[in-house]
Length: 128
Image: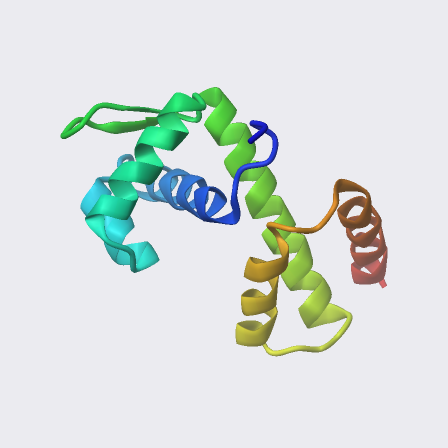
């Protein structure tokens, strides 16, 4: 798997790690497990895979640190989520919950070109 194309699951992990570090300064595996509703074993496996791809620095029982590469990827995923959610709410008039649910699903599979066009459209539409 190419570093640019993380699985949707690993994108969820990097987003969770980034958001927790931003809001609380740190994150522990147990917190990721609870937030994403996955087993500790799944978290450990994901952390090892993210570390191997250099998105995070992680040692068992140690602090989870996000790298600059990880921050860039997390911001990309969050940007996609926010633009998609905004499109669903402001253009399609979906509820907040439905917009967020769909954004979560689509943020992982949308092509770069389609996202670019959707972002451009959404930003233009929101100015009106």
